[in-house]
Length: 94
Image (cartoon, rainbow, N blue to C red):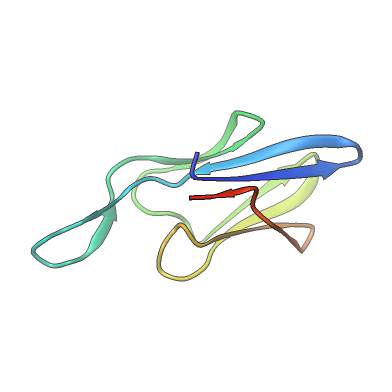
């Protein structure tokens, strides 16, 4: 997984993980694109997938609480997780 957050809600631990795909650069026009599917998982269960590019925002629930995963900037590696409006720091960043 490319990014992982550990979240505790009401004494229960959750692991939110993102595999956001791989960027490929076209040598002719220098544009970037994904070459494989990305996915969002909670405790190993797939919540959402995407095939062409990382969505700007993904809305979902963690333990019944509203969460949003946001892409910040031009590259998918700059991701932020918010739980009930509060930003959660990632456990790992690659």
